[in-house]
Image (cartoon, rainbow, N blue to C red; front, side, top):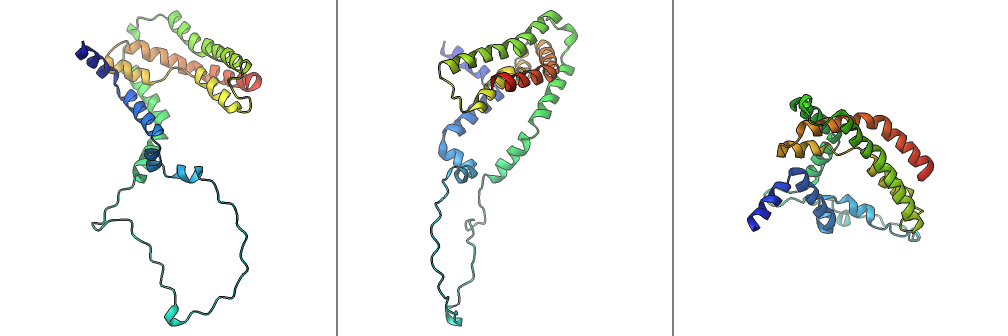
Length: 219
């Protein structure tokens, strides 16, 4: 029984799941977060209060014997000349993050080309109902929940961006990582690719209308 549970958990630990768990760990551990992203400490540290400037005093002329020594920057490397800094790793990750959207679309197109969508077991009405539930019914449920939470004073009224992000999360299509998961498990690859393709093609119009309605009537 324990081996069956371990095998099931091992099958669930796909690459997207492992990356999500790693991001949660980095976000929860503050020292690790500050080590990888040192600019967070500069943004979060309070600015010092301005102190009154002292009265200027005449500076003595330095003599040759009391001339200040040249400012020599201390080298942060050790004796071997090696210094580890996570800056280059973060720079690479940020460069890759800018290409996430086009790369995921390429993955979707590649999965659709590799999968035989003609042999899909889902009919067009079924695909339409799935897209309707994801792009229309889910945003309506999110709007109802937002109004209910506002009535119960569970959502701060002074933070409209929080409400807008909640509504956007409910109105976007399904994640393209579903194609990666279905490909890794070899289950319903053609159906998943077809559903995601029609959802993202419809979201060009539906998501634009939803954003306008959110900003006009809800937020």
